Image 1 (cartoon, rainbow, N blue to C red):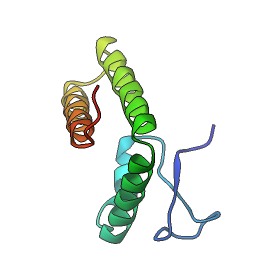
Image 2 (image 1 turned 90 degrees about the horizontal axis):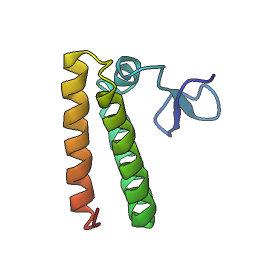
Image 3 (image 1 turned 180 degrees about the vertical axis):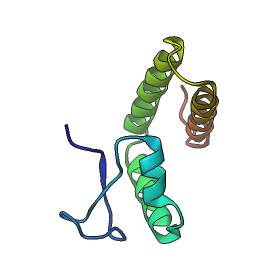
Length: 103
């Protein structure tokens, strides 16, 4: 199984311009921590992709929310992670509202 990666201009050119994000949130956070140009680049890519096809973005985000809710429902996560995931769901909902997409 390969680790999650993201294509980026700012990342070290390890393999075809991909930056490995690691196998968990902590590893992914380390990849972005303190690298404002990388954060801005990814933000711009997300905005471009989202606005190219709002319906596809809405569907993907709704599916992700369902997945997160299922993880929470299984009650196999630490309370701190649960709080983080609940905040993430709220942020996604807010983002969808900002897109003017009805969910």
